[in-house]
Length: 209
Image (cartoon, rainbow, N blue to C red; front, top):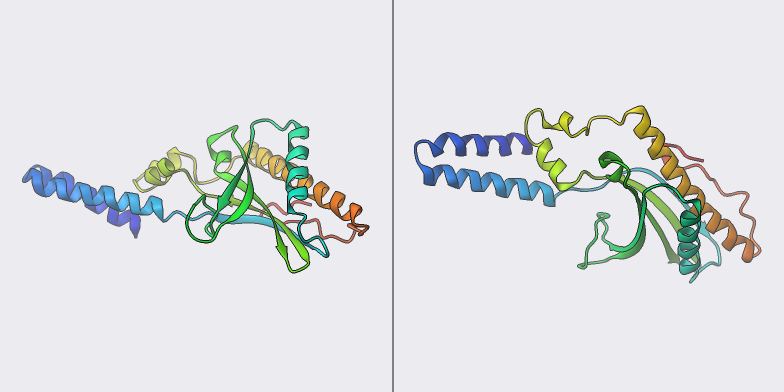
């Protein structure tokens, strides 16, 4: 529906511009505003996830995050970008409303892979620590704009990942998954807990274990 509205506004703007520049300009401006609204309303889709609740680990967030970062860097995985961000509930950086600190990892080897980001979090829950990661997909702003116009979606390659893309995506997320689990194993070992009973398989389209 949004795609139809945007195209209709621009089409009316172009047609009317030949008869009345002012009227045409109004519809073109409305089309631009509609595009900006679509960009602002983008939401990250969660495609895969994993989590564990560690009893008695309250206050150990920094240990898990630091160990995960060190482990990822030690793997020397190509083109992985790692940064810490304050993220809102829509999994987008924000300084307003409720936020939580996430470690965000992305593979920058290609445009399509860069749109898949892994959000890693560790947060206290009672006397426990809830550790999790979420693999999300959200197209860049210009890809969102391009997808609104006929024929542009395939041009920017949003339809499907090819075999090589899937291999690279799976390798990158598996690396992050293993590094976070290594950090969890280390913390539980230090606390004298058994980590062998943890369900290590992610829940989503990759199903990493």
